Image (cartoon, rainbow, N blue to C red; front, side):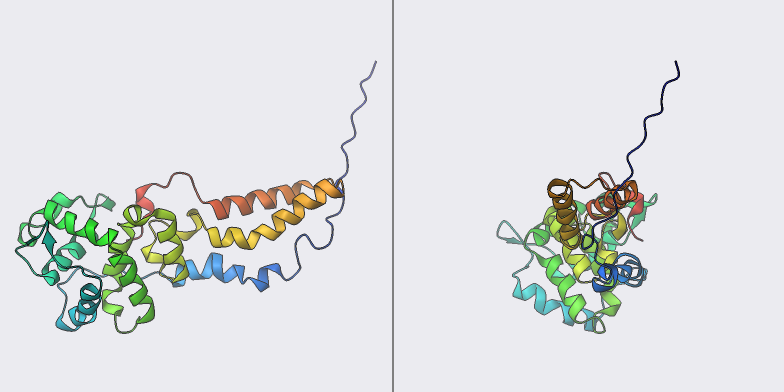
Length: 240
C-alpha cells in the first residue's frame, strides 16, 4: 500500500499593514545599520601627552564633576592632568590583539593599582560618560582627543553599566566607544522600532488564524538577532 504524501499547507499571503512599505525609509534603517557604524568610527592615533589646549578643554569638566585626586582623604602625588595622561596611555595600549593589562603601564606614570583605582572611581562618578557627551557636542574642539576618550569610555563600560553605555555611545554616533562592532551588540532602540511589526504579526496569527509564510519567520528571526546582539563577544572584536 502506497503511503500518500501529506500536502503541505500553503502559506496565506501577508496581511496588509504588518510591514509598512515605507518602513525601511521611514526609520532610515540603511543608514542606521550599515552606514553610521562605519562613518562613526574614530581613526586611531598613537598616544601623546595632552597639550595645554587639550587639558584646558577637559579641566572644567573634571572640576565640575568633583573628580579631584584624593584617596581616602589623602592627596596623591600627581596632578589630575598627569593621572589622565596615564589613563589614556593604558586605554590606548593593545596587547596581543586585545586590551593591555594595568601592569604594562610604564613606571613613569605611577603605580598601576593607583591609576586603575582613580580610573574606576571616575567611571562610577560618570566622568567618562560626561566626556563622551562633551566630545559629541564639541567634535571639532576635541577632535585630537577623540580616540583617547573613546578608548577610556569603552573600557569602563562594565563599571558604568553595559547596556546603558552602549545605548549612549550609539545615540551619540561615536561607534569607536563601543566594545565591539555595532551590529553584534544589543540595540534597545532598534527593538522599539521593530516592536510594532512583532505585535502586528502576533495579532494577525491569534485573531485572524493566519498561517504565515516561512520567509516571514526568517525575517522576524533576523530582526530579533540584530536587535538582541550576540550572547558572547570575543575581545578581539574591540576596535583599535
